Image 1: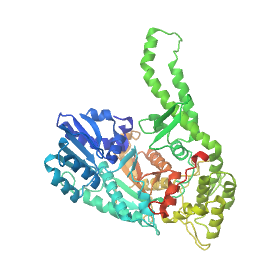
Image 2: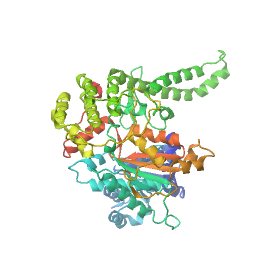
Image 3: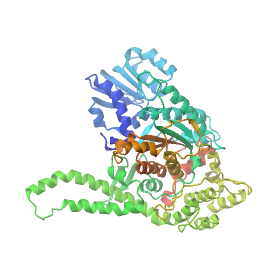
Image 4: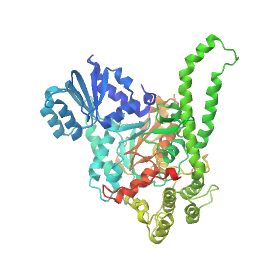
Length: 592
């Protein structure tokens, strides 16, 4: 079993797959073929390894959409999304002639009647099993999920979108499968926003679909609400967190370094091209990802020294016995050293960017975001904070980010002022980088008489922070207030009530006193599930772990359609006003 799947969402998803697909497999001793579409391929590789499948007598894994040779003596397991393309590809495998002895079909979600009837029409005599297993989300990390749909951002927020309603319906279906997999029937709440309706619409959809799903439980009784809350919020609720330069390891790496599909490519000291996957199979990554880069840079070299020291013999004598012991330990040493080397390199890369230009930017960004300087003195004139950034030869991308933080800090600026800023950054032809934020309900242009109240933030003046990391994502305030049962009902209306017992940490922690430190014990407490429409940031993901760690009695799970990086979001915002074919992007990491 993959190390990363030993806990959290990945473990739960793998267990669900074992209890359905694998349990059916075990009933027959015959070796089988597993056929997957792109979504289920990604889903399975996130929570298990090929060796896990081999142990269950699955000998070959094939792509549903590729042409395959018939293997008439073998049974095929089809694990696929209930889409027209997948169902058609399945039918093609059995019409006119079957490719396999029999088919065991498992859908990630509810299969529409027309597709199901089509399958029956052509393939009924070949299908031995047909089930819906309700997993149409992606377990990204122990406490993070996505709907694996970056395109949802444009579908929901583009003024030219043709499929907003359909996208929200699909996200609602995916959220229901998350709740089903966790066996939670949560109370649903959403962040009220006078300009935007998406959170309200999605909350209604999810609540209605949950009621239908949980109408009858396995024993034929109506299932009641469980100890869980689901909060739905839109991306415009906190535009600052996705734009700031973050200095915690994971968020910083994904912002400054071109990491695609969680794969970090680097050159080793001898010039060889290498790559490493940053996921929960790498326990060092799990230990370091939420730490500040200053701590990471200090810790890794120490670890390397410790490993090297532990290989030396304390008495200096080399005996055959000692050598044999060392040889036994070599694979473990090699694995440990490789992990440390990867992170030494990645942390070095991050620090290179930091010392080149990010360090100077961070002070201005933090002052604009927090509204006060390191000493706690209020920033009276944000423009004075911004100007040095505009006059310095930073990349266009970094200047756009700074201008956005300025506009967010003053809750929108005048048309005249915005024109001057756009000229300064030299993006006259690409004003949409800034203007299109209005599609997310974020004030960009306001009249001088306009007054908008900024949300009050939790007092964190007593918390230890680094000078260049004073900003806390707004979602962390929400998580803490939800757990303490202090969320304002006017701002966070209930789409459906949670049980009365959900009064945050108090009631739950009382049940946990006997063993508060155990992670599994904590799972028996309550769950807070947060869904951000329009993408979640790495810093917000970190908050879910921090609050869970602090509260111990409530597990916080956070998810979205996809995970954001600052570059990706700025480009997505720009393309909101474009038609389907006109896409313009900036990627200036190399100039940084």
